[in-house]
Length: 332
Image 1 (cartoon, rainbow, N blue to C red):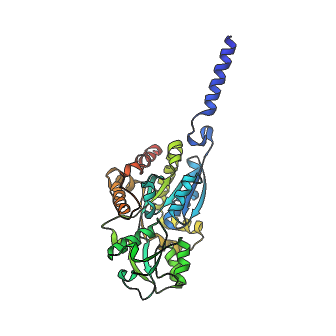
Image 2 (cartoon, rainbow, N blue to C red):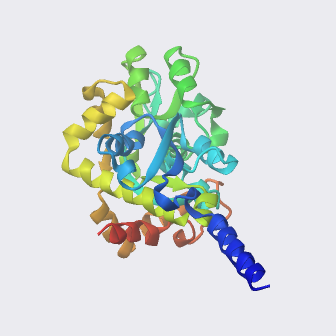
């Protein structure tokens, strides 16, 4: 009987050991956590991933990463909820998605100024957009800048012929003269300028800086946050180190990003100039003093007014500031 009891106890311990925690994709024993990471093919969305690969930060933190490029943030959030991605990158126009509970922000990245409302030659004022055909990628920063610009001109989306399009289609349609105007961003705008060098820029992010900031961010799926907390912390630690490398080595980061995107360094440098990059120390301070909360609250007010959110939630419900700052403390 004693032998039977001992055998059962040993079997129970083995079973518990085998089951363990659902956290970390079973990374105990030195196995790497597998992570699927989405990004957008511009400097904002790619630079940290380019640095992390070059500096072997994923390996340092025990992560095996697979990256996939997307044209916008909302598509990535859809992929997060479908289980196809664990992490992704979004521009400011998609922040309403984590605010509505569809993902969690694990790190901010930069303050953007890449978005523009552009029009065909001959249209010189926002008021002239009334009745015009305007292309816009729904739920993106292009959507956001267009809505803000229309409000500035005393117009609404009902005053224009609003045409939802993906970003690449806008480039083609504007170049072919099929739309009169668009809400779009750099570096895609450079592609449009090749065909329409005399286009008119009617509005930019900086025009609304007193009203709202335009942070870009990295997001995690709700499932990853709930079940893989340690992996999330490791990924954030990678992002923090990559941020600091980018801040200390801007020229090298531009070269690494250009290589990853298969673009010229000059093109990437011009794209990088449209945003203010943030480092981990700055973000730690902005998280602690409430600056990030103010940014996100301002974004939330805009999204409520634009009909994207029924109410403005507390940023603490979707920005994991403690996880971001904690990843820095854990790395020390």
